[in-house]
Length: 331
Image: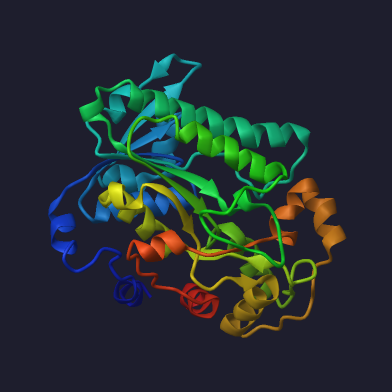
C-alpha cells in the first residue's frame, strides 16, 4: 500500500517549481503535532529532509507519543505553565514556517464546559504562536499556516461555499471566526486552512465508521443526505507542505476539501463497497444527539465546500472522489 501511495501522491507544485522546492530545506515548527493530522505532517516533513520542531505543552509526553519522530531528529519544545518552561519563543526563532494545528478534539461529546475548552484550546495556542512570531524582527519571521475548519460556513444542504463565502451563525462558525482572527494578528505571510472531514484509518470520521462496518453493523448517520466535504489525509498534508513551500501563493484562506464533496450516504456507500460489508443499519439522529450532545451537529449537519483557491494555485489532489479515497484507505 505504501508504494501505491507513493505513486498516487503527486507533487502539488508545478514541474518548474519542484526542483527549487526539493533543494530548499525548511525548518518548521508544528503545534498539534501529536494529533491525527500533526503526526502525519511531521512524518512527511522529516522524510523529505526538513527540520521539525514540535511545540507542545509537555515535551516528555510528546516524545513518548511520537517515538519515531524523536528518533528521526524532531526537537521538542514545551510551553508548560506549571513548570514555567516557555520554550516556544526560542523554537520559532530560525524557522522558515510554523504550522498551527492545536485544539481539543471536535468529535468528543459537547456540553457547555467542553465548548469552552474547544474555544480556549484553539485561541490560546494560536495567540502563543502569533506572539512568538511577532516578537521576532520582521525579516526573521517565519510564515504561518494556521488551521481552521469548514464549520466556518455554517450548515446548508443547498448552498455551495468557496473561500469568499460569508461565515455562518452557529457555535462552530463563531469559533472558526475567532480562531482565524487570532491567527491573522500575526504580522507575517499567513495561510488559513479551512479543513473538511479528514479521511484515513486510525482517526477522524473513518476511525469511528470503519470498525462498525467491519463488524457488519454499518449504515448512514442521521438522514444521510447531509453534505460531507472531505479530504484524504495525504492530500491535506501535501497541501500544508505546499503552503509552507510557497507562502505568497497560498496566503489568505484556502479550503482543504476534495474537489468532489459527497453526502453521508455517499461516504457510507463507499465504505461498504471497499470493505465488502452491508450498508444497512442507519444510526438515527436522536441517538447521536443523546451520545454527543450538541456536538452531533458535526456528523448530522454539513456544508458543500469547494477548494477554489487550492485549484487556482495549481495544487493537484491525488484523491478527487470519495470512492477512490476510501478504496485506498481500506486497501
